[in-house]
Length: 291
Image (cartoon, rainbow, N blue to C red; front, side):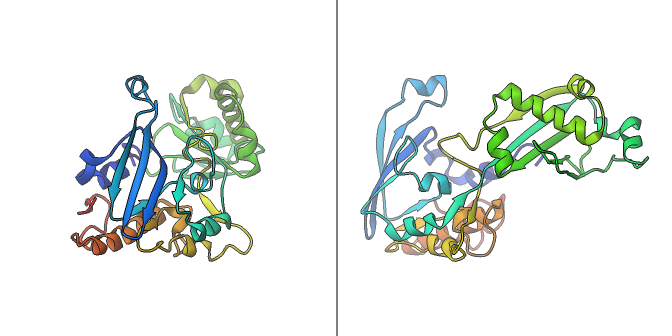
């Protein structure tokens, strides 16, 4: 994704852009079979929105599709928690059999791709790393890195999951950047000062601490192998759940799992509301025909 991952939601939202309420957090869903009221409030995500923060509103519809991350769905209190009236107990039980994984992802841009240099080639037994795609190691901080391959660019993305993510994810931004630089220096066998001197930009988002994500993606707990399928079951053909955690085809933890559940549920809601089918909108870049 040369222009960034947001090209995916941009393409999917093209036909309904004017109906999307940005910088608003849903806090309550009141429903009965065939009718829902989705209540939301504005949140301060920018200087302009700070003036509107706290403003509330309601959207009424025949059905609701809930696609929040699993960590948010599991919340019962806090700014991102959503209450259901009446409660959706079966979905709650299914969600309790799943957990949200912890992941730290950090992207580093450099003045040049130092891993293609002669000194690194010597460290690699004179093998060229010009076509390096993934680097896996046993590093204690950030063990996995990947390049933009097949595009050759001076960019490396670092990834740590599980206990490692919990540990480095709690660091201040500057400390995380320093840990990332040190990890690269260790893994490529070059001086830390050289890596730091070539660094031009560092990007990181705290998905673990963000109240609207609370983690990276889901996985099944012990005895939770059927939980995703159970979570994906509609409640009275009125409340529907989609997203990677609700994918019953083994694609949990993936973007295509999330998109697949969205198309499946949207098609079902379209049939309920006598809207046009989504059968012709089955690939990214072609917008769905229903909102």
